[in-house]
Image (cartoon, rainbow, N blue to C red):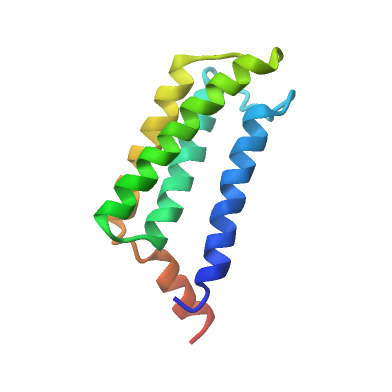
Length: 123
């Protein structure tokens, strides 16, 4: 990948955005029932999908999946410590489900999305 450093920077920006949104006093909301769970699912799914594009080896993907799942658990405990956010086990489950869906989506698309994008942008 010729733009690997850029793709990594975007990936770490996604991590930072999730941390910020998890700890901010007034996060954005989806105005549907259980919208926050959908937000968790989409955020962690996107994160895992992104990093699966950068790390194809099974061992690396397992490590990232475990790290992102642990991050989701840790952020729930951090939310409880804030006093203005709520701790929810279902959020942890939504995070882990998002990680699994992101991995599955990367597998189904062949894990080549960023490479294809590079070829289109940089012929």
